[in-house]
Amino acid sequence: MENNVDLFFFSWVEANLRYAILFVPLFAFAEACIGIGLFVSGVFLVAVSSIVIDQQLASLPVIALLAFFGAVAGDHVGFYVGRWVGPHFHHIGVVEKRKASFERAEKLIRYYGPFAVFIGRFIPAIRSIIPALLGITDFEKVKFSILDSLACLLWATALAAIVYGLDNIF
Image (tube, helix red, strand yellow):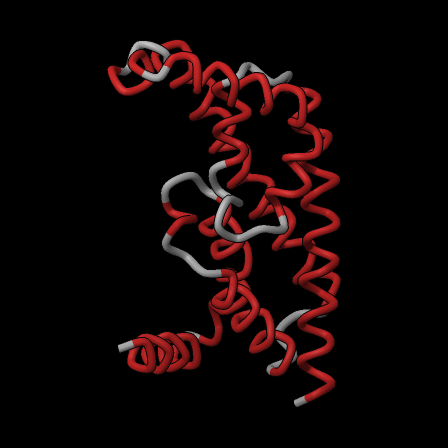
C-alpha cells in the first residue's frame, strides 16, 4: 500500500512538474497546519524539494524561503485556531473531568512555551499541535510570532541542508 502511495505521488509530481515549485510552500504549510499535519509527512516536502532542485526549477535559497513561509503560515493557523478554541476549551466535558491534569499541562506549556516552539518545529509527531496548544494557553501573539519565525528559519535551513545533501549524494 505504502509503495502505491509513493508511486502515485512521484508520478503525479513528475506529470505536474511545472507546478512543483508551488508544492514546496503547500507541503510546508500542510505538515505544520493543525489537523492536516498529522497526516502529511515531511517526506513529501523533502521529495518535492529534491525534485525541484534536480530539475533546476529553483535554487536552494528559494526553496528554503518558500518552505519557511509555508511553515510560518501553517503554524500561525494552528496558533490562532488555538486562541479561538481557547475560551471554550475548558468547558469541554473531558477537560472539565480532568481539570487538574489540564491545568498542570497548561502551566507546563506556559512555562516551557518558548522552548516548545523550537522543539515542536523539529519533531514531526507534535509539529502541528504545539502552536494550537500555545494558542489555547493565551501565549503572547508577538512572542509566538518572533519565536516561531526563528524556529521556522532554523527548520528551513535544516531542510535546505538535507536537500543539498541528498542532491550531492545521489
